[in-house]
Image 1: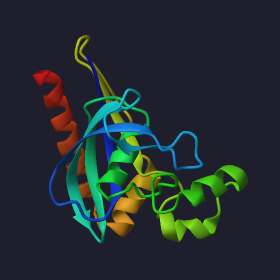
Image 2 (image 1 turned 135 degrees about the vertical axis):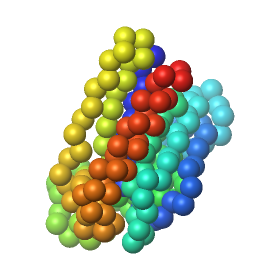
Image 3 (image 1 turned 45 degrees about the horizontal axis):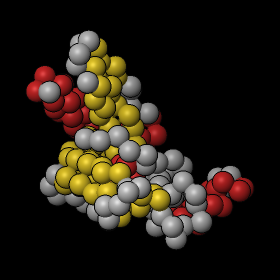
Image 4 (image 1 turned 90 degrees about the vertical axis):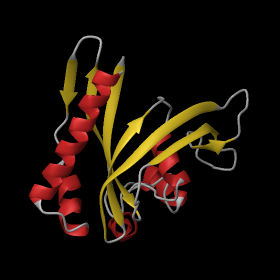
Length: 178
């Protein structure tokens, strides 16, 4: 079995773990063809489960570990929006999808940085684990991600490293359990 671990920075302060279990389907009201939404169970809807575990919260942001229990298109992004804590930097599933449409048409605009917080989604694929073959792959944390944690959440380097280590240990434990 292949498992994935993600790190994310969400808007708002999430105080306790949140498990989201919903169905996902195309958003018929969006002009964006690829946009999905939480919907009821139907022939075309796909079941999705995501676990958001806060590692640190401050200044209206949450650094969290994310575990997908299913693998659906845009799952983390849709579920973050559903719990009213979109990813920092989210253009499509954030506050205003018009930013996404304008971005596709004309590219990045510096004026969006104040609204979005980052030039990209604050979502990082941290680890990939194959329990059957005993292989794990780790991706280093991008510098813009850690800079945001330092400047916006006020986390020092030691605290960032501790949160990441705790998340990594939880991921490794979940591989052994399954």
